[in-house]
Image (cartoon, rainbow, N blue to C red; front, side):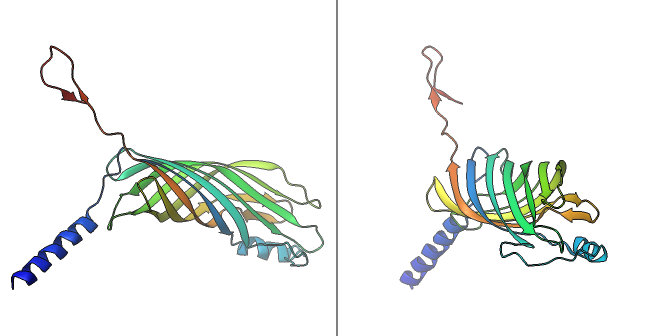
Length: 225
């Protein structure tokens, strides 16, 4: 009976340790990765058909609605559950309309916002988060057949994901982001240049510096700051 009791206590203590979370404030992190971008454009495709220029897959390198994207993210824990974030990204896809040469759709920008996150939650090593950001996005949708100008627009994004800390300093992450942004193709219609971004990569963590004791001669006991 004593062995069973000790076993139950050991399991309870292990569970408590596994479920213990760590405040976010003071922790910094950088993440670098990339993946695919899915950009639905049903409205644009319908208008292109009405204009007599339906989508075509004649060129092998045409990728739409899938494309490629890369991202870098910088965060700092301002409060126990809140992280300030700056996210940089770039995305690319190619599409073609009948009678015109292929288009390149490129979008990149910087988004500023917040992430709600907690370290070691609900298990040690896991860092889940959800966030929202906004910022300038530079968009270029152009073809030799229909040259389009660069355009700067205000992008809006929501994202969620999680990082897994392999050590105190390094880990892996996955992230899913929905970005809202639209450009215009002359004589056709507006085209979505955002969509769903799926990323994976590496994260580097910067734990907060431990507080030190300051011992000033003549002022009594050391104080912490």
